[in-house]
Length: 86
Image 1 (cartoon, rainbow, N blue to C red):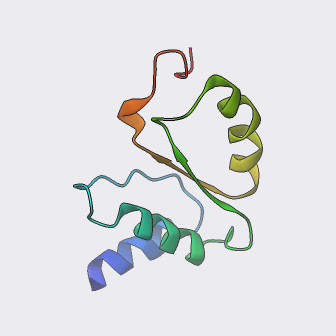
Image 2: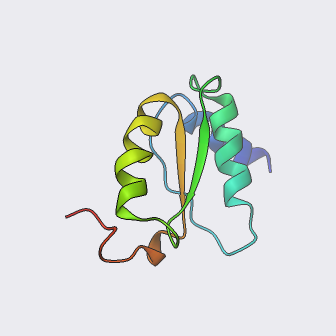
């Protein structure tokens, strides 16, 4: 756990990251912890389920949220071809 915490502290200053693990491993919890340690901690943390994401949601929610806070994209493999950026 200490090494995981150290990696999260290294990611927290503001870079983009990819968290890969099996279902139930705590990816969302890790993303929230990184957000809490980051300079964006006072900004929104938004988790988007890509399985239910529409083009309209991408256009309205994603651009404004990514500028202000942290966005977690869950189930990226579930993006429909219509929702995927061209």
